[in-house]
Length: 126
Image (cartoon, rainbow, N blue to C red):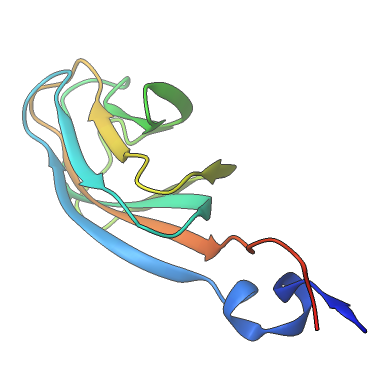
């Protein structure tokens, strides 16, 4: 009998998938882009593409998994179409929320995209 773990045996666990959470920002300290998945995943990164420049150098977003902040991306006063990313590398359990929360700037906006990889289930013997 052989024991297998799909982490190494199947491409579904090494191919990144993405979810566009839509535009975030436009109001200070507001939650945007809530995402829930029935499958456990690893949040590799969150990518932001500025759509409206902020008015402060501290314009940006906190990234949350559940109620825990796992990263922050500053978009500042960058012009539209500028991109920035925040590496995360944190586990997201089944149905746990992933979201971004704007910082104190009420003007800046950006499209947020989550980059995930699926987390493996338990090993099994066949």
